[in-house]
Length: 303
Length: 271
Image (tube, rainbow over all chains, first blue to last red):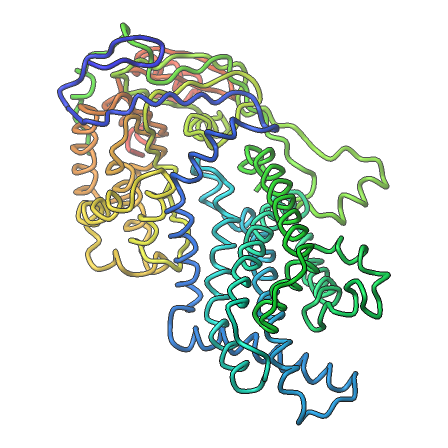
């Protein structure tokens, strides 16, 4: 015997499944607006294995778990770094022979920014590309963009050893415990990416061409962030310090800046980076995921 | 012609406990956009012309009925009657526009894996993904995947990409997934039409077995023969409205009379 919700006693049937589910699902007429968030988060955590498997299978179907697939994951951003390196060398008139440290610096920023780019572009297509999963199954939809972020993160990981190798060979910047602070900024980047991926994923449902603008938007964003350049001139006391406050409006100024200072220069960044970066990440996560969750019941009709 | 045996009709319908599914004044309206693909560009163009963006399609209108525990409910109706919409709403995929649905228990729907999620992935990977999305644990899914492969009788194709399957294999796999998800409420949408005669017999036997343990079953079908044989209750929908709720034979008679085709060979054999 067991108690159903509503206080009705239900005798067990001959089939004694121990976990005979008394779950009551109520679907009511609410297409927009937030559900019970605590329940939603519980569901989200409960079904995380699905997101993990979904991400793994997308990695598998892109063949990135093979040797050459992994190699390409590393080669692709490295070649991109070389392209930007040449560009910067030409624009600044430096000698290529003296450019080793510059290449390392570009790699440190670019590899991290690739994580954001990957999460944003995969997250944007995560709902509209979800097809049968979205139109036929009921589960917390936020898992789709989160799976995209997981994929982007796992594609980022193999570039880390490449960076450390380049740093060892080409750069005389110090190695120290401060480099571990990079983990903090990496976490911020993942949180920020999750929010952005959710936001773009929901937006894409309503505006299918949004993703066409995305690469340009991301590239401009990269030029405005300390990816190819160092944040020093914009810091208080620097040559362009009057732009410092303006720069803080770019979340990537703090996150990429703090990351670079930690793992490249092995120094503790200003407290501002820690605080502003954290604030931006949390704001993006809340805005992106709440926008997504408030809209998600509409998705199955729209895709 | 293969008839499924009627043992499910013998199962007692329980009205003393809350119904497995309760549909209360349910309406579902699709809002479709003019353009096939909504874009920012077309939104701006539309804004300039002052056009209304959406057209409404009333897929289900003010539908109310309860499905007591022990029911196997046939859902019949012409194309566009709202049968599949109803299934998707009960599965929690589509949100109602108004009204309310209460479902007690875990649902396994054959909507779920109809064609699989990703045809580049293997059958097993699709099964695992579907199971995890339904909230099963990884070990549960891994264990089921073998039973599913065995029941679907697809051999080594289980570990081949879905794109290599014949349509019969895909349908057998889909059915097998649905019945192995240990459902409290089983929903089958036109799934029995695929598969050869031998598989149909096997499928019917499996469904009988499931009806012993499941709380309720929904069978959406154009094959009136299988609705009559497998169901003990029936609703007939037409253009989103409930036309009749009665025993299968009464519903089928009314429906076929409505269609003015009578129970001819086509509707009986298209099982």
